[in-house]
Image 1 (cartoon, rainbow, N blue to C red):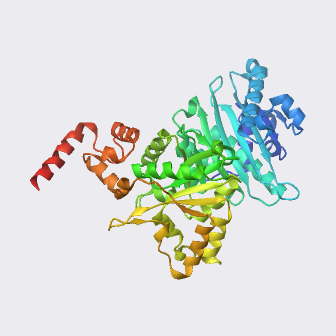
Image 2: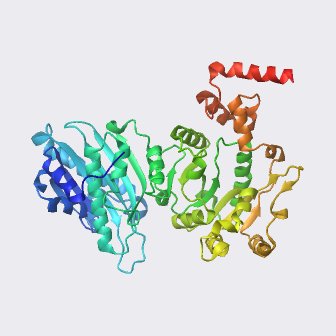
Image 3: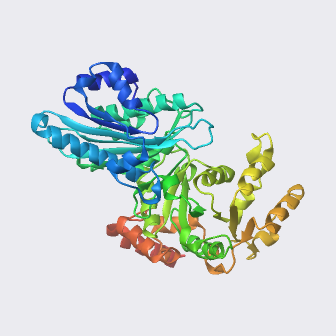
Length: 486
């Protein structure tokens, strides 16, 4: 288990005393705080070839080029900074000391708290570096949100996490998980949130960035992480900027035809909303940490990756979050975009939302949670469920305590809650758990209960407890034989 053993100044000094590590710093937005730590630690001439800070936009554009949309605190700007500065180090110093040096370029582009304290403070930080002289280059890139309520404290925190990133890359690179944990040395999550991390390069070829993102959430460094439909990690506020978010939450182990029916019909109704622009809609499947766990056991990382692979194969973005309550999820989404969002959920989840016991820790109880959940530009689309007697349970016959019924009716009348229509009743008799049990038993016909390409992936990889191909036929024969003996 990782244990912190060095403070920020000691880390900077150790790097300064290592004559192999040599490169440049380029910092924009909150002072040159990381470089300052190396200067103050002593022996900085052994590490720093150059420091710079192009604050003026004209100067910055002349050096690094312009950004689409005119934004400066974006990943594309960071990568231009890293690549330009690293190339200059190699070009100017490789002949002189390339055979004995591990070159690097450190960069950040951030927006710190303004004088009025009205802006969102966040930034991109990255390192491009070698682990051996003349070796290949690697990258570690993170996105942070600064939570201190004073500009000076934010600058200090940025300097600390910059030193931690440098030290981790050079001294913890053999254990990316340790590197990740070390980023918060001398910091707390009250000061800094890390909501994206990406490792790349030849020396990190075996690192799965989705697992690194999962660990960000598990370790409490952030409450949510996001992947694209290609499986690549995304920074949520950048990926969902000016987007309509349509989200489905569940265990999704596996995703079934019921989920597809819910998504298909819910999406049609969401797109029909007068204040929704179809060209700006993104579909996200959300997995909470709670839904990733199995009983008291910790998260099975292979199972997590299997679920992500399947969802991505359907073209979904995937979010992992620690927002167990829906009102917390909505508060988070409203921070990412100001456009209307839709949540797709089943009637049991709506029933759970109206359980007052979940809000006993809030001073305002259920009303306080609903003020967050329904005051934003969000609408709930409810997929009906099939009752044991064959009837359909929906918003029309929704059971709610008498004292909450006026509240429920208010939300329906004011277009905050809506039933999903045109559903396929034939699919509704099969639950996710029952489908999973059929898969585990290799029971004939389970393939028809999930999308065709999902069944293919489950078979190819023997996912979710499906007997492997060698034993699959024997299992099916055994089931047929057992049925025949009844």
